[in-house]
Length: 593
Image 1: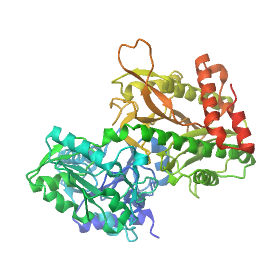
Image 2 (image 1 turned 90 degrees about the vertical axis):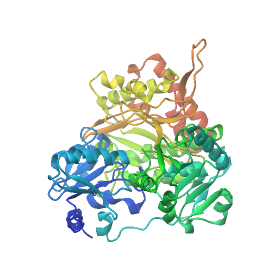
Image 3 (image 1 turned 45 degrees about the vertical axis):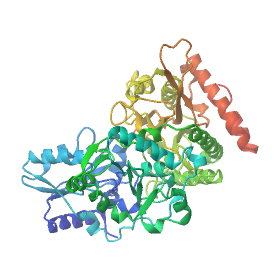
Image 4 (image 1 turned 120 degrees about the horizontal axis):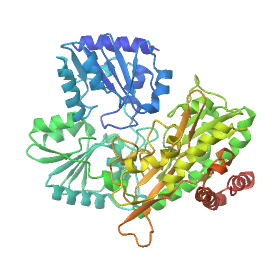
């Protein structure tokens, strides 16, 4: 097998053959997905980086990899610093780096099926300052040198019944058509895989951990809909589920269908559709309306059926987590288990409770590995679970009823007072966010400080967001909403029916990591005499919080009551699903402070 150094050299040789002086390699696919199929893992193949967000730039002499604060430690473990410069975003950007490092007059290649139009415009302007040019490629040079590149999945689509979705695909498309008439557009392009899955009530297994299928879609204002998908992925049941109003076309015909929209007004999401789609429509003579995908907000606002399904999924998942934490309480102190054996055991418990997949690769971090925010254990990094450490497990399951995501930090043996103190600061922030009531119109960037305030008071912080949206048997990271200090989605108004994670943390490099994560549902807040609508959060996840890590004296009476009430609800929801020693453990773990 070639080394990553060999692959970098092979790519540089290929760039020379294509008359290019550089190339940009993002971690995404032609749908701008966060999690991508094996065939699109170009960044991992080239660099060895296994995180879920990042990009790289290759020049004749220099090469750089760009990651955010979640991956500062991971990228240094996985990517050779002798070959690659480590760059942090948003402190820098590919455009800014290229404006400093690209040779004068250079031709820098990019794949127009892997970047947004805005990125192309910004990078092009930055390069122009150097007298360099951004050049679209018709064939990705990474693919040309990736000899054993996997084929895209050919797995069959799955129909997601209305009993799970709460609304038929026909009803969703009718609402989309009404929106198009209001916007005076003739057609809408859907490219985000979870948008297509939600709109057509279909699921798939083309991307690990995310139940989506590789497809494109067009919805027309006259009522027609076209789904572009490989024919071998469709069976009679799915065809019947989609109905006569949906025309099935081969995925390879998508560009041809875009060209046929000449003279029409077409809605395209500039944040979710690649530059090549805009370029094709411009070439066809279509009038392009750059607006947000009309499925994004309805998908984020769960209906009553989806909420009921989410609660069922959370209850099943809570039982799996309780079984695991009981197992860990016995096995952890023995030193016999490792990060990988622990995550494997948790997956078995989830499968016993009906999970059809994980919702992402489990983050199973023992001791110092817990400080790597998006750590993934490998044979090379696998640490034992041992006394005197903290063990952090961030994990989730995909159930037909809903998607789960939960993090628990457990003391293996006796924790230090520093660990307990910092854990309690994180817990206080978690409780503050879980308990807040806020007026309609509030954004995530207005709530983020609630989770950080106790850490900030002691000069501490964490380098990731506090909350992300979660789908219904869909993406574990779902927009448009997010809770964070800045960035995409943090200025999105929070609305009832949205689901967020609540996950403050704290990390000591080389020592331990702490994170406490539950999922929460936005609900109407009952405030007598309120002069306008107010909302709050209902906690959906139910799994014990390690009481041995809580410094009770640091909690206010209201915070103690929150913990006791949370554990009482956890026992009521999870207890009936357990028996024997596991149930006895749960009763002890949920005892009042």
